[in-house]
Amino acid sequence: MESGLFLNNENAKKRIDALFQSGRIPHGILLRGGDEELRKDCAKYMAMKFQCISQNPPCGKCGQCVKVMSDCHSDVITAKGSGKTGIISIEEIRRISADSVIKANEGKYKVYFLFDVDKKLMREGQNAFLKTLEEPPEKVVFIMTCESEKALLDTIRSRVTLLSLDSKEQVSGEILETAENIVLSILENREFPLMKSLAPIMGDRAKAKEILLQVKEILRKSLSQCFMVETGSQTAEKASLKLNKLKILKLMEATDNALMYIDQNGDMNLLSACLCGKYRRIAWQK
Ligand SMILES: [Zn+2]
Image: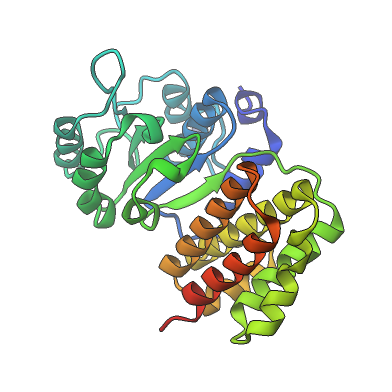
Protein backbone atom coordinates (compact mmCIF):
# COMPACT_ATOMS: atom_id res chain seq x y z
CA MET A 1 0.00 0.00 0.00
CA GLU A 2 1.37 3.36 -1.00
CA SER A 3 1.45 5.83 1.82
CA GLY A 4 -0.22 8.24 -0.58
CA LEU A 5 -3.25 6.01 -0.62
CA PHE A 6 -3.42 6.09 3.11
CA LEU A 7 -3.31 9.85 3.56
CA ASN A 8 -4.90 11.40 0.53
CA ASN A 9 -4.53 15.00 1.49
CA GLU A 10 -1.54 16.37 -0.38
CA ASN A 11 -1.48 19.63 1.51
CA ALA A 12 -1.35 17.97 4.92
CA LYS A 13 1.22 15.47 3.72
CA LYS A 14 3.45 18.21 2.37
CA ARG A 15 3.37 20.01 5.70
CA ILE A 16 4.22 16.89 7.66
CA ASP A 17 7.02 15.99 5.24
CA ALA A 18 8.41 19.54 5.53
CA LEU A 19 8.46 19.22 9.30
CA PHE A 20 10.47 16.01 9.10
CA GLN A 21 12.79 17.43 6.45
CA SER A 22 13.66 20.32 8.72
CA GLY A 23 15.79 17.80 10.59
CA ARG A 24 14.77 18.92 14.03
CA ILE A 25 11.92 16.65 14.88
CA PRO A 26 9.93 18.02 17.79
CA HIS A 27 8.91 15.66 20.56
CA GLY A 28 5.55 17.35 20.97
CA ILE A 29 3.37 17.91 17.93
CA LEU A 30 -0.08 19.41 17.85
CA LEU A 31 -2.13 18.76 14.72
CA ARG A 32 -4.80 21.38 14.41
CA GLY A 33 -7.77 21.82 12.08
CA GLY A 34 -9.26 19.66 9.39
CA ASP A 35 -11.80 17.06 10.46
CA GLU A 36 -11.41 14.31 13.01
CA GLU A 37 -10.58 11.67 10.44
CA LEU A 38 -7.92 13.78 8.75
CA ARG A 39 -6.31 14.55 12.10
CA LYS A 40 -6.16 10.85 12.99
CA ASP A 41 -4.83 9.91 9.56
CA CYS A 42 -2.14 12.58 9.86
CA ALA A 43 -1.15 11.35 13.32
CA LYS A 44 -0.80 7.81 11.95
CA TYR A 45 1.12 9.02 8.93
CA MET A 46 3.54 10.72 11.30
CA ALA A 47 3.85 7.60 13.44
CA MET A 48 4.68 5.67 10.29
CA LYS A 49 7.35 8.21 9.45
CA PHE A 50 8.86 7.68 12.87
CA GLN A 51 8.79 3.89 12.79
CA CYS A 52 9.32 3.02 9.13
CA ILE A 53 12.59 1.23 8.40
CA SER A 54 12.77 2.02 4.68
CA GLN A 55 15.04 4.70 3.28
CA ASN A 56 12.13 6.82 2.25
CA PRO A 57 9.65 6.72 5.12
CA PRO A 58 6.84 5.98 5.26
CA CYS A 59 6.94 3.19 2.70
CA GLY A 60 3.59 1.78 3.72
CA LYS A 61 4.93 -1.70 3.10
CA CYS A 62 7.37 -2.64 5.83
CA GLY A 63 6.25 -4.46 8.96
CA GLN A 64 6.48 -1.28 10.99
CA CYS A 65 4.28 0.72 8.62
CA VAL A 66 1.74 -2.05 8.32
CA LYS A 67 1.48 -2.41 12.08
CA VAL A 68 0.96 1.33 12.53
CA MET A 69 -1.65 1.37 9.79
CA SER A 70 -3.54 -1.50 11.35
CA ASP A 71 -3.38 -0.02 14.85
CA CYS A 72 -1.39 -2.88 16.32
CA HIS A 73 2.08 -1.42 16.78
CA SER A 74 3.07 -1.95 20.41
CA ASP A 75 5.06 1.31 20.49
CA VAL A 76 2.30 3.47 19.07
CA ILE A 77 0.01 4.06 22.00
CA THR A 78 -3.29 5.91 22.10
CA ALA A 79 -4.54 7.64 25.22
CA LYS A 80 -7.91 5.97 25.58
CA GLY A 81 -9.74 8.31 27.89
CA SER A 82 -12.49 7.08 30.15
CA GLY A 83 -16.21 7.29 30.59
CA LYS A 84 -18.71 8.48 28.03
CA THR A 85 -16.86 11.70 27.38
CA GLY A 86 -13.52 10.01 26.81
CA ILE A 87 -11.80 12.47 29.11
CA ILE A 88 -8.11 11.72 29.52
CA SER A 89 -7.67 11.62 33.28
CA ILE A 90 -4.71 12.78 35.34
CA GLU A 91 -4.13 9.10 36.21
CA GLU A 92 -3.90 8.20 32.56
CA ILE A 93 -1.43 11.04 31.96
CA ARG A 94 0.64 9.73 34.86
CA ARG A 95 0.50 6.21 33.41
CA ILE A 96 1.65 7.54 30.05
CA SER A 97 4.48 9.51 31.66
CA ALA A 98 5.64 6.43 33.56
CA ASP A 99 5.34 4.23 30.47
CA SER A 100 7.29 6.68 28.30
CA VAL A 101 10.41 5.98 30.35
CA ILE A 102 10.39 2.34 29.24
CA LYS A 103 12.30 1.78 26.01
CA ALA A 104 10.51 1.05 22.75
CA ASN A 105 9.71 -2.58 22.21
CA GLU A 106 9.82 -3.08 18.47
CA GLY A 107 9.97 0.37 16.93
CA LYS A 108 12.56 3.13 16.76
CA TYR A 109 10.37 5.46 18.77
CA LYS A 110 7.63 5.40 21.30
CA VAL A 111 4.79 7.39 19.86
CA TYR A 112 1.81 8.48 21.93
CA PHE A 113 -1.42 9.71 20.39
CA LEU A 114 -3.61 12.04 22.38
CA PHE A 115 -6.61 12.79 20.21
CA ASP A 116 -8.88 15.82 20.59
CA VAL A 117 -6.95 17.30 23.48
CA ASP A 118 -9.00 20.50 23.23
CA LYS A 119 -12.02 18.48 24.35
CA LYS A 120 -10.54 15.57 26.26
CA LEU A 121 -7.60 16.91 28.16
CA MET A 122 -8.84 19.23 30.88
CA ARG A 123 -6.72 21.84 32.61
CA GLU A 124 -5.65 19.48 35.39
CA GLY A 125 -4.63 16.87 32.85
CA GLN A 126 -2.72 19.47 30.87
CA ASN A 127 -0.92 20.59 34.00
CA ALA A 128 -0.05 17.01 34.87
CA PHE A 129 1.33 16.56 31.36
CA LEU A 130 3.59 19.65 31.35
CA LYS A 131 6.70 18.16 32.84
CA THR A 132 6.75 15.10 30.59
CA LEU A 133 6.11 17.28 27.59
CA GLU A 134 8.94 19.58 28.53
CA GLU A 135 11.54 16.92 29.17
CA PRO A 136 10.42 13.73 27.49
CA PRO A 137 12.70 10.68 27.50
CA GLU A 138 14.74 10.11 24.38
CA LYS A 139 12.96 8.71 21.32
CA VAL A 140 9.55 9.55 22.68
CA VAL A 141 7.08 11.58 20.67
CA PHE A 142 3.70 12.92 21.68
CA ILE A 143 1.30 13.61 18.85
CA MET A 144 -1.79 15.50 19.87
CA THR A 145 -4.73 16.61 17.79
CA CYS A 146 -7.31 19.34 18.26
CA GLU A 147 -9.92 21.29 16.39
CA SER A 148 -8.72 24.53 17.92
CA GLU A 149 -5.81 25.09 20.26
CA LYS A 150 -7.71 27.74 22.21
CA ALA A 151 -8.68 25.43 25.06
CA LEU A 152 -5.06 24.57 25.69
CA LEU A 153 -2.85 26.23 28.27
CA ASP A 154 -0.22 28.60 26.89
CA THR A 155 2.35 26.46 28.65
CA ILE A 156 1.24 23.45 26.61
CA ARG A 157 1.07 25.41 23.38
CA SER A 158 4.55 26.78 23.82
CA ARG A 159 5.96 23.27 24.27
CA VAL A 160 4.59 21.78 21.09
CA THR A 161 5.02 22.39 17.41
CA LEU A 162 1.73 23.35 15.89
CA LEU A 163 0.92 21.96 12.49
CA SER A 164 -2.17 23.35 10.85
CA LEU A 165 -4.08 20.99 8.59
CA ASP A 166 -6.52 23.55 7.28
CA SER A 167 -6.37 23.55 3.54
CA LYS A 168 -4.86 26.72 2.29
CA GLU A 169 -7.65 28.93 1.15
CA GLN A 170 -7.00 31.19 -1.75
CA VAL A 171 -5.97 34.49 -0.30
CA SER A 172 -5.80 37.53 -2.49
CA GLY A 173 -2.44 39.19 -2.91
CA GLU A 174 -3.79 42.41 -1.47
CA ILE A 175 -4.99 40.78 1.74
CA LEU A 176 -1.72 38.95 2.20
CA GLU A 177 0.29 42.10 1.56
CA THR A 178 -1.76 44.06 4.08
CA ALA A 179 -1.34 41.32 6.68
CA GLU A 180 2.40 41.15 6.11
CA ASN A 181 2.62 44.88 6.40
CA ILE A 182 0.88 44.73 9.79
CA VAL A 183 3.27 42.08 11.09
CA LEU A 184 6.31 43.99 9.83
CA SER A 185 5.00 47.16 11.47
CA ILE A 186 4.59 45.30 14.76
CA LEU A 187 8.30 44.54 14.57
CA GLU A 188 9.20 48.20 14.11
CA ASN A 189 9.41 50.28 17.24
CA ARG A 190 7.28 53.07 15.84
CA GLU A 191 3.67 53.80 16.51
CA PHE A 192 2.67 55.65 13.35
CA PRO A 193 3.57 52.93 10.83
CA LEU A 194 1.65 50.41 12.93
CA MET A 195 -1.42 52.65 13.05
CA LYS A 196 -1.18 53.19 9.33
CA SER A 197 -0.79 49.49 8.61
CA LEU A 198 -3.95 48.78 10.61
CA ALA A 199 -6.01 51.39 8.73
CA PRO A 200 -7.33 48.86 6.16
CA ILE A 201 -9.19 46.95 8.89
CA MET A 202 -11.34 49.98 9.68
CA GLY A 203 -13.54 49.53 6.63
CA ASP A 204 -15.36 46.43 5.64
CA ARG A 205 -15.84 43.73 8.28
CA ALA A 206 -15.39 40.74 5.98
CA LYS A 207 -12.16 42.15 4.64
CA ALA A 208 -10.90 42.99 8.13
CA LYS A 209 -11.55 39.41 9.13
CA GLU A 210 -9.62 38.05 6.19
CA ILE A 211 -6.71 40.35 6.94
CA LEU A 212 -6.57 39.41 10.62
CA LEU A 213 -6.85 35.70 9.83
CA GLN A 214 -3.77 36.15 7.66
CA VAL A 215 -1.98 38.07 10.42
CA LYS A 216 -2.67 35.10 12.68
CA GLU A 217 -1.43 32.68 10.05
CA ILE A 218 1.84 34.61 9.67
CA LEU A 219 2.25 34.65 13.45
CA ARG A 220 1.56 30.94 13.59
CA LYS A 221 4.25 30.41 10.98
CA SER A 222 6.68 32.53 12.93
CA LEU A 223 6.02 30.30 15.95
CA SER A 224 6.96 27.30 13.80
CA GLN A 225 10.06 29.20 12.72
CA CYS A 226 11.00 29.53 16.39
CA PHE A 227 11.19 25.72 16.36
CA MET A 228 13.35 25.86 13.24
CA VAL A 229 10.53 24.67 11.03
CA GLU A 230 10.85 26.28 7.60
CA THR A 231 7.59 27.89 6.56
CA GLY A 232 8.69 29.70 3.45
CA SER A 233 7.44 33.03 4.79
CA GLN A 234 10.10 35.71 5.06
CA THR A 235 7.87 37.86 7.24
CA ALA A 236 7.33 34.95 9.63
CA GLU A 237 11.05 34.35 9.74
CA LYS A 238 11.73 37.99 10.57
CA ALA A 239 9.10 37.90 13.31
CA SER A 240 10.61 34.74 14.79
CA LEU A 241 13.97 36.47 15.04
CA LYS A 242 12.61 39.58 16.74
CA LEU A 243 9.95 38.14 19.02
CA ASN A 244 10.02 35.28 21.49
CA LYS A 245 7.49 32.45 21.59
CA LEU A 246 5.48 33.93 24.41
CA LYS A 247 5.14 37.26 22.62
CA ILE A 248 4.06 35.53 19.44
CA LEU A 249 1.42 33.55 21.36
CA LYS A 250 0.17 36.74 22.98
CA LEU A 251 -0.02 38.49 19.62
CA MET A 252 -2.00 35.54 18.26
CA GLU A 253 -4.34 35.75 21.20
CA ALA A 254 -4.86 39.50 20.70
CA THR A 255 -5.63 38.81 17.04
CA ASP A 256 -8.08 36.08 18.05
CA ASN A 257 -9.85 38.46 20.40
CA ALA A 258 -10.06 41.05 17.64
CA LEU A 259 -11.63 38.44 15.34
CA MET A 260 -14.22 37.63 18.00
CA TYR A 261 -14.91 41.33 18.43
CA ILE A 262 -15.61 41.64 14.70
CA ASP A 263 -18.05 38.74 14.93
CA GLN A 264 -19.82 40.51 17.77
CA ASN A 265 -20.37 43.54 15.53
CA GLY A 266 -17.89 45.69 17.42
CA ASP A 267 -16.98 49.20 16.31
CA MET A 268 -14.27 48.91 13.67
CA ASN A 269 -12.55 52.24 14.31
CA LEU A 270 -12.28 51.41 17.97
CA LEU A 271 -10.97 47.96 17.11
CA SER A 272 -8.13 49.28 15.00
CA ALA A 273 -7.05 51.71 17.75
CA CYS A 274 -7.31 49.04 20.44
CA LEU A 275 -5.42 46.49 18.42
CA CYS A 276 -2.67 49.01 17.70
CA GLY A 277 -2.24 49.55 21.45
CA LYS A 278 -2.32 45.84 22.26
CA TYR A 279 0.16 44.86 19.59
CA ARG A 280 2.52 47.60 20.73
CA ARG A 281 2.36 46.63 24.37
CA ILE A 282 3.01 42.98 23.62
CA ALA A 283 5.73 43.40 21.03
CA TRP A 284 7.63 46.31 22.45
CA GLN A 285 7.62 45.37 26.08
CA LYS A 286 10.98 44.37 27.45
ZN1 LIG B 1 7.73 1.46 6.14
